[in-house]
Image (spheres, rainbow, N blue to C red):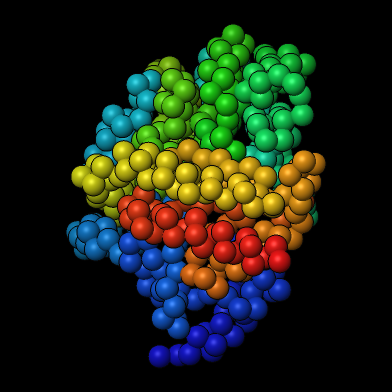
Length: 449
Ligand SMILES: Cc1ncc(COP(=O)(O)O)c(C=O)c1O
């Protein structure tokens, strides 16, 4: 076998990576195997996959059943167009299953292959909807500061982290941002949920609701630092959307498929979205797949569209049979092993373990919902000033102790500093859950010294 060093050399020569910078790629980790919640690198070293890789390996690694589902479908029918007038069996079964699992208002699904493509599709669907309903001027899309919606042009324009905009401007016009319900950093005296929702209403009224199509929101902000909204936020946001005829797009690319302890997350607050973007956990990452669930009213408008107004949106791999077959098998695993309920229980255990880190001088905030948690690092607990650079050192210490995590902040958002994001696979055993908090404690202590 080629040595890891030789492979890394060839990689540096020929590969451009997401978030590419050569300085960040001097010592790439080369993973060669995954088992459950563990990853194994080319040197045989084992790591806890503390972020389910990229928040996506919900069912854990090494599920032969998913490999078999892909192989069986590929051997029988690797691909067939799903453009109108044609279909395939796995995508039909998956569509029905998703509609039944999602919100009571969910009615149909359009398939994509990734999160950003799901959001691009959602933006086009809301504009299409309003045009079909005789309101062609409703085009603007609101999103929130700290949001992450992907990096294609419109998804990037909705993403609320300036680092993702730098060097790629100009942004797509008609994308606007409002404050996030971020309790730890909320400056006002009011409840941050009410305050953030009302800030949206003020911005909406300023723009003119007749020009606004939708607002997109992650139920729990993921890449922005696992920001869990107060319980007041989404009910108020829904009310404002209803009052002003605005569609609510839930970006559940991370929060879908059990991550927060529910199949989809807005149920925590009894809220129904008009559209749901999903990806990642739908296949537990074994093959790329995403999609947009649409509610009954949007579905009805699309079904009633006259022939000269058809939905001219498409992608070669929409409804890809092998990806949909893997998703069907993955959902069967999540159901059979009760991984959604497990995420709720283990998530509480994970959060309790992380809460115990609050005695450390650099731990400013600990938060989470289900199996997604954040530990925000600060220079000073009173001022809440960000601890610039500490997160990077903690991540390196954790890595050396066999724990993979991800940071919000650092160079991507220096104004608010670093948050350690933790979101292990939903099947992670409780011994590993407890080890995560132990390793993080040792890593923060070592990095702060
Ligand atoms: C909430 C959210 N939306 C969208 C995306 C983009 O997904 P993808 O990278 O599959 O395009 C991500 C990716 O992390 C995400 O977390």
